[in-house]
Image (cartoon, rainbow, N blue to C red; front, side):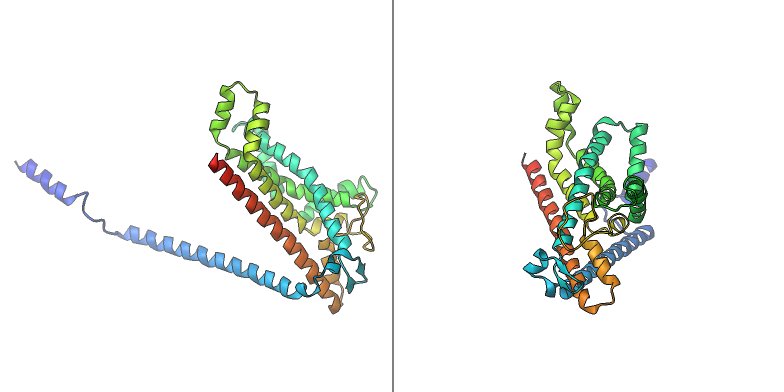
Amino acid sequence: MSAGTDLKVDASLFDPTAPLTASGNLRRRDGVDRLIRYGATVAAAIGVAMLVLVIYAVVSKGASVISLGFFVHNPVGLVGGGIAPFLVGTLEVVAIAAVIAVPVGVLTGLYLTEFAGPSSRTGNALKLGLDLMQGLPTIVVGLFVYGLIVVGLQGGKQSGIAASVALAIVILPLMARSAQEVLLLVPGTLREASDALGVSRWRSVLTVILPAATGGIVTGAILAIARAAGETAPILLTDSVFSSNSVSLNPFHGIATIPLYILTIADQAIPEAFAHAWGAAFVLLVMILFANVLARVILARSRAKMGGS
């Protein structure tokens, strides 16, 4: 009888339907959670505010020189003309870099995802190498290409192809990592269905896995290319000797680029020329912004297509 009474008392003390009361530990955790959330919100607001200030400064100081002639005319000294050679040169150098880096990056991501197992020494070493390349300062990349190509292969002659190789090294780890992450998001059921049908691995990759990840791979490629388009340090060491009087399409000679144009104008003590530097910065900013928006649109369409299927 006494035991039954004790059981009833214990049951009433630990009633599962009773409301929970916050203990000291729970209140401490709630306070830390609020502090972290508020801190993250303030940090994000500061980052957005700095971005808005940079965009405002570039637009307000560079929009005054934007015109059709600014895009199609050659420069006249440092205070006149347009940026046609620099605009075409930037597109050319970045395009060659993309042709070099994007296929290699996609193949690297395919190898890490589809062929290298979790315990593969080669795969782990490759992942480590990509992480190191991604964190490598771009000035070091430019110095490496300068010693390898400019001095070693071209006898000290700078060229657009050397700049493209340097930018390709910048793009490669970003492209490989983004391709790897996108390929990992492909549903495993697609691989299992392909294996169940007896399809070979390489054919499964080409006809099943890659088409499913095309949108994400294209998005990663655009973002990686946009990241490299504004680099100045590698180009400064590999492609800083050029003629800006006309458009040059020969990648084995010096090619004018927008980042070097901005750097050259900024080094000159000519206030009248600063407007052209701001205008070139405005053009470069719009190009990068357009690339990012395009990447977002492609990613959204890819997600919608996969969700619909």
